[in-house]
Amino acid sequence: MSGQPRISIKAEDLRRVYRRGPEEIAAVDGVSLEVEKGAFISVVGPSGSGKTTLINVLGCLDNPTSGRLALGDRVVFENGRGLSEAELTRVRREAFGYIFQKFYLISTLTVLENVVLPFTFFRKPGAGDDVGRILGLLGLDKRAGHLPGQLSGGEMQRVAIARALVNKPAILLADEPTGNLDTARSEEIGSTLKDLNEREGLTVVLVTHNPRLAGLAHRTIELQDGRVR
Image (cartoon, rainbow, N blue to C red; front, side, top):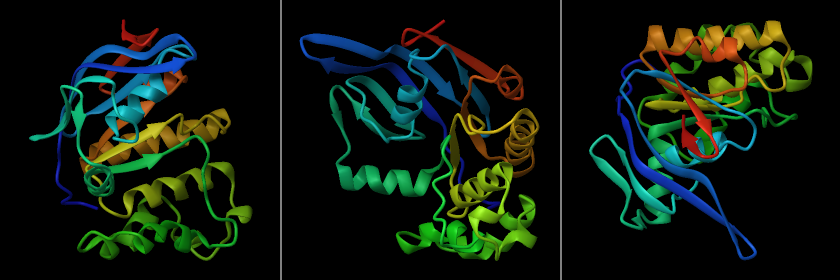
């Protein structure tokens, strides 16, 4: 995982508007921000404030309605036009690792098989060389042959983190990764994310309701009604 390229995210006046009948809802409404290389950023705010929509747009899982989004020197979206779906798929594969509130592990696959599952679809050069180290880094090396049903909630989330890291992403996006965990397991995952940022230089963008988790970041962005407060 070490040696992965670092890139920044720069968003300018991003908007993401949804239609509900005749009504327009601006889930993200004029957000401008920059995530520097190697930063650890947390995004907080009440339910419905636009946190998940924002991280989905930044991670190229959703297209903005307007504004500008750039990853490093590459413009992903500007002036109402964006990359093709094929190009976006390539960007997602090469730039990002994603962690969600649900673990999305396959119950019939072992820890190791779940972690290397992304290789079925895409593998960066040299990515497989780090699997053992990633498992050890996350304390999963002795769990490699276990099934998800034999793990604790914290261990399952660490498997999801390992899976997100296996293809050497430049940026790790985590959307409420501790939402299904108790306090102790939440703090465990928070410490893991902080260690990955500090020791591995991994850029981390974290969406969370947990103020203690948000406090681990270098900078916190608070959203209210789709806008940065």
